[in-house]
Image (cartoon, rainbow over all chains, first blue to last red; front, top):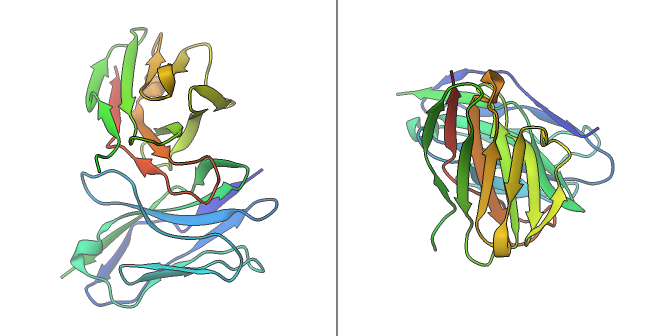
Length: 112
Length: 115
């Protein structure tokens, strides 16, 4: 079946450090891939997405590239800020039905 | 543009009691989803509506959970009777279409505690 595996947290970084959160997926066909973020006390919101192989999604300094050969969609940011502290979820959806399949989430804490 | 509204935000009940959650999606969004998020896990789909028809309810525990979306707008999710393992955050989301690439917009969720 379809599934998403992302790196265990929590991840603690100092401000301006480089961030990578690994995400791999299992799916038949060509899913769309997403990163959602949940800031403290807020609801889930879309951070970025990619809908086909080699696409790069980007937003707010975050990037992720859809790698079909390695079935991966790793999230990266060159310089994190305290305000990036949140829980990050990798997810996939199939084209025929939009429901999302989520990973377990990775909690990121950024210290000043 | 108003976001997805959910109520109540918090609910505490005893096991074997019943509870209902309400969701109002973004205006014009045809697709509505209910997800269950247990602490420490990612959200899991319970049921998906396209307008007022059910598209996918394969993971809905139908012996105790029910959901409806009257007139293709608001939706309610009910649990009767509740079990301890139903303690979770219940998230409602909506999107313009059920095509996989469309963004889903999430409400703030209802945190249910079953004692």
